Image (cartoon, rainbow, N blue to C red; front, side, top):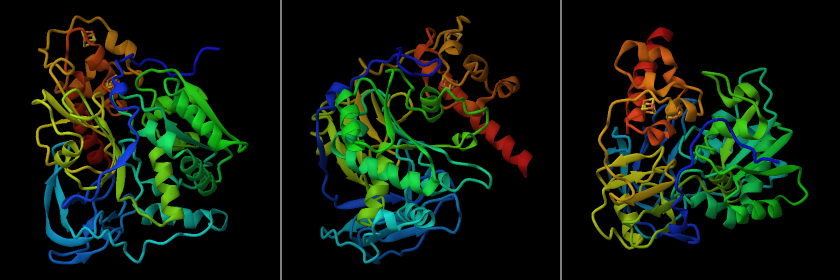
Length: 437
Ligand code: SF4
Ligand code: SF4
């Protein structure tokens, strides 16, 4: 039987061998963390501490009453050095709290186990998701409790755990699956309970047979299916994963919720398990540090707010000046010029790449070959959307673009399609907001 997959997509080089066999190691608390107060989709948090305050590990330092948001916690114990601003990977400048670590890692009194899963009802689990500041850790950073609060009449029947990790270089999810398979299954059980779902699926690309085996062992005789998927980019994108696993397509402008499905990354499932078992909020995450300009590529557990520079230093530093530094994967991530940028909840990788791997190429005129249309997993016409700022480009559904970069990757004319499509999306979103107002 052919492997399950979705329509479109591209075969990319993988480069995963650089870090795939490196077990997760712990980066101790850095001397200083800079924690952005906007790390998720939704309302930014308001700061709850002042310069000079003593804070404990896991203490809430920023929060909001807005529903679509997630609180932010101190990732070290120590002294608030400044309430300031910082730059994010996408170039935005946002409020941030700088904490100087006292090296004690003293937990806040609020961090305590939440009790046995069997004694927690759906509302209690949803509250734990929010209190722990859980967001999608595959990159989207959508607040988890919001995904589990469907509008009236929506029946959440299926929970999908995403173990695809289809981006080149990234191996943090692979290591999480090998080292925390039991926690992933525990997290899935909690998600099934809060949703009242009947079906639990775990999708993993076929190039990770050890992770497929580890999850099958952890699942045991529970009624969840671990399903191998074809190795193809972007197999792990939410809508494409749903298509591959269930054969259903999320409608244009819609959400997985419209089909009664919720998708969560493997790391989010582990974070939920930790939040229930130990009470630990989302203060750290596993990050892949890789690329041919990194001394010792690997997978590190890193406190939120640690600078990229500290992360590279912990992996042997940069061996030569890289051509490109990327936060996230090379396809969907962001190229950055400033390595003081902090690690956030949605950051799965930091990469330093040479010109051989990430060459800077000149755009040539479009030859109308249609290859970008063939590979687009969202059934779009990328060449026409990328015609932005021409008005007509906005008529080609830019908001359905998942920013996978497959069109740019395949284009023989090296057109910077995704860059221009992102601009078209900003304009389309602005018009949608003004239409709704
Ligand atoms: S792949 Fe590139 S050259 Fe071909 S139609 Fe699309 S934009 Fe034009
Ligand atoms: S238009 Fe968007 S969804 Fe389609 S291939 Fe390009 S980046 Fe991916």
